[in-house]
Amino acid sequence: MRRFFVEEIAPTTHSLSLTGKEARHISKVLRMKKGEKLILMDGKGRLFEATIEKSNYKEVKVKINKSILPPPSSPIQISLAQALIKSNSMDYLIQKMAELGINSIHLFYSERTVIRLKPGHLINRMDRWMEIMKSASRQCGRAFVPTLNPPLPFEEIVENAADKKTLKILLWENEEKVHLKKILRSMSPLPHILAVVGPEGGFTQDEINLARKAGFQTISLGNRILRTETAAVSLLSIIQYEWGDLNVIC
Image (cartoon, rainbow, N blue to C red; front, side, top):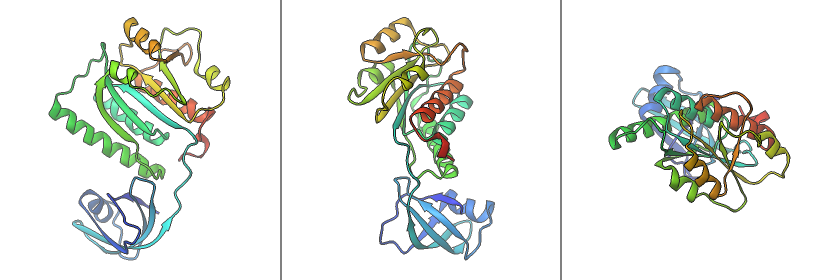
């Protein structure tokens, strides 16, 4: 069944009206009709089966049939601290992170971050990225939509990182000794991983020193130098394969 996000569904709700983008998508794009069933998700873990009672481009009215058990979540929570990168690359990265089961994304500016968004432009981009994450989560059947945090300076990201029961890693192209796979296979899984991926130009030595002082371990993915968005996708894929649930996602 097709899946759609709604802002909130109370447990006692028997009917609901969908408007805006979701209504247009249901009626104009998918051309769903009265009597067809769909799944509604509130993005917080609750899913409901519903039946369309009325459908047009302004409003789709549905009857709630029953609640549905959500699919199991990954056994670990993965947070990505990601430097802002160029628009198309960031769109791709955001989409793939949602598909691969990220829990939260923390954006940041660093010394070599090229992209600097003005407040008005940042609001528009954040709205766009949230829509991308919702769409990817809906397609994947995820019951939860990842959280997206507005950009902070790199220093705040590393200094405010939680310490307890968190594996803190930073991907660095100059790391030659410590590989991600070796770390993951040498220890018991922790409940939370915070991974840091930098901008196109990489990190400065001062930033690496700051991260190490805050308890981050610099890691490598191998001999290849990857684009930032490719590195982030590879990083999350490896983590989900070793500690998570990559074999059942999507």
